[in-house]
Amino acid sequence: APAAKMAALNGGAPWRRGWLPALQFVRRGSKAVTRHWKAMHFQRQKLMAVTEYLAPRPAISPRCLAPRRERAEEDNGYARLLRRQVEEVFRDNRMIAVCQYNSMPGEDMVLMRHYLRKHNIEVKFVLNEIVRPMLSQSKYKNLLPLFVARNILLVSPETKVKEMLRVLKGVPQVNLLGACIDNTILSRQGVENFAKLPSLEATQGQTVGALALLPSQTSSLLQRGSAHLTALLDQHIRQLQAGEMGSPAEPTPAQSSGTH
Amino acid sequence: RPRSEPPLFPPGPGGVAVPRAGLKKYVLPPDYSGITVPERTKLKFMEKVPAVPKVRREPRQLRDIRGPSQEATDFIQGQYGILALGGGYLHWGHFEMIRLTIGRSMDPKSMFAIWRVPAPYKPVTRKSLGHRMGGGKGPIDHYVTAVKSGRLVVEVGGRCEFAEVKPFLTQVARKLPFPAIPISRDGLQQMRQEEEEKKLNNQNPWTFERIVTANMLGMRKYLSPYDLRLKGRYWGKFFLKHRV
Image (cartoon, rainbow over all chains, first blue to last red):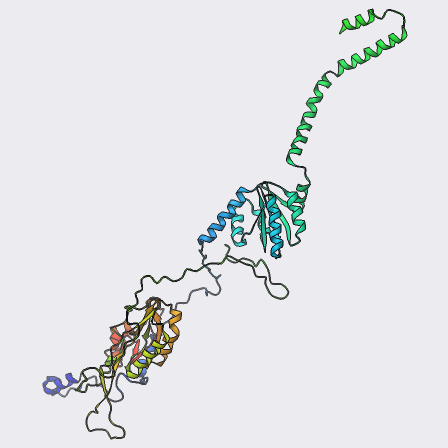
């Protein structure tokens, strides 16, 4: 603009007619770039105030809405492995007992495991945070309340409940909470009753005997009528024999044998 | 897993909940496979005066401080750096401070640092103390480097995390003559993304850019022609971060 002014001064037609430029640049004050914060013209201040950033305001404040926590998709290999192991345990073993586990001296723990191992019962430690989601999706939903706090699983392919209870009685730190034997969920009382039952072979024998009792009576039932008649006739013969001592007893036995 | 599990152990009379053991999640160590550490890991020594000192005294040209930077705005070799958020001049004292502080705090075997600003090249004149105005331009006193806002000053990289590097970079950034922050590649990207988002979701229908380009209300009378380019985010050497 100073150049334009000079050009106008030198020889422009409007300048000769006494024309003043509309814009007059003020050359007072500091330069554009200063060390201090240069004071803005008031109009510029107003412009800066008008053109400030306005943040968007949603209709409902985010504090009123429930916090949207994203699902932590860890699913690391270790968790998957543990889950697989737990699935195997539930599939392969007939008896699964859940016990409360308080801290025990090491040697007592080893002894208990040894005694249980003798009866082919294994002690398994499972993490609640892996077992709980698995159980809630499988058919063992009712075992969920047991998997709270520190617990262990005593698993076995056979059902030797009596020996297990005997071992656990000697260990006060492990308390039986419940068991799932042959896909039947039993409470503590149920397990004790189960232990009092006779063994499978004995019960089978008992059932067979009870069932075979009636057929064994069939033949005697069918023969009851004729046996009764035979007994009556024999009694009659004895009475007659007792009555007639000397008379020939041959015709009457021959008649009685003929009627048979 | 349910969103909010009711506490399996509600706090007892003492107000303490019994802790329960969970599965330990192992975090993999960071992967530094694509990072090559150059031979000279420490910062190069910067000369006070260039090899060919200037004979002709140069005008002040403060426009090399004004506005956004066009060079050295992105990362080259390193992962972390110091970003300038204002304009200013760096002289030899600043260079020495940066070099020594970073050299002291970093591990030369696993980390490296590079300069993103040139050595001082611009001569600054000073008149001797106590003399009146006039008598010509003073002799050259020292040399400086001009830094505009948005420029990286140093870059640090190597087998290290941002948390390791941040303390000494903040220490350096506080001592610089302009506002500066330590920043990583992700941080820079995020900053730019936030700026874009702010521009998009600004509820104010009146923006500086719109008013200046259309010269609404004759505002250009009170603004500089450079404000068309600077769009209200820069004022002198200062960078106004809060403005859109």
